[in-house]
Length: 179
Image (tube, rainbow, N blue to C red; front, side, top):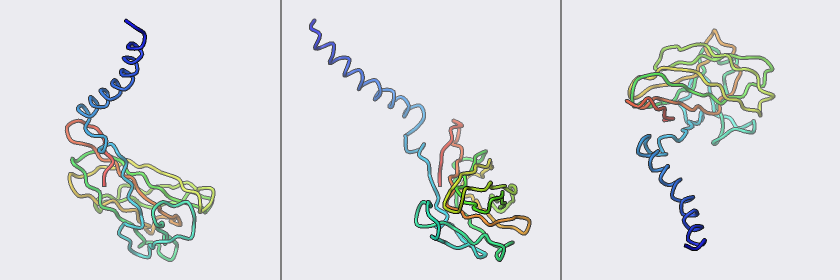
């Protein structure tokens, strides 16, 4: 047997093995599309109480970010998002925010109208620097509402760029980022 066929078989193996492993992963864990991260832009959320789309700071994703979580709107500013879960259970939501105040500021996290907790959002370097904060939540099966609200007990004064919800898939316990 000549060395050329052996080289071709090694080259073929380098191609075939990853393809076979990918197919096996798809059969065992579902399609790759199910594992994709979904980002919900804040400017596309439901805004209320003085929360408003802004573009006066750089570094945001999408077409802008949501500001208006200022003292003038304390107790009313809110942005909410629809999140669909295939099954009820534990999940999380990541918030991309900017906080150029120099101190940790707070907003309250609500899921389906119930307050989950007051969340401390550490300062970022300035208003053009964005950070991500993740919180554990419990989702109901089907439609859910996730809201970040500036209550009278919060210090507010942050900007919100987006959220990334993570729900749990049925029966396998695998997680899925969904909107």
